[in-house]
Image (cartoon, rainbow, N blue to C red):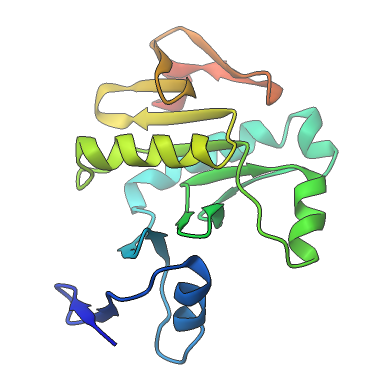
Length: 188
């Protein structure tokens, strides 16, 4: 098996081709961790402590929606399958009750709505790749939150977005019609 080394002296394989091969490797003892898998690359993923307030705000808003009452979820760091060579892990991901039932049957699901919080370590190309992957997998909406600029980029396709900031109201419609708030409230 070909391997690559992370700065933490962790060795990761570099010869895996499919999500199935990656998940088989990940299930082996000692391969714990949260990783995305994108066309043979294993990408370490972790939520940063400075992101917890944003996640907490969004989850608390979501539990006030009709979709939450219908057993839909907005959950942090949950697998979202794009295809057999890509698996992403959004900072927050939305799944319907029907998708959750499919997951219980062992089926793979891709998010309909993903939320990413821009990390200092992400390059512009990383962001573009994630956006493309979510929409390739069937997402209908993606929010990219940029805390340092206190903005939210709402994507409805890889090439169409609206920027929300300050006192503007943002909504997750049509995916979650009653999930909305004033952007400034997120950054208080």
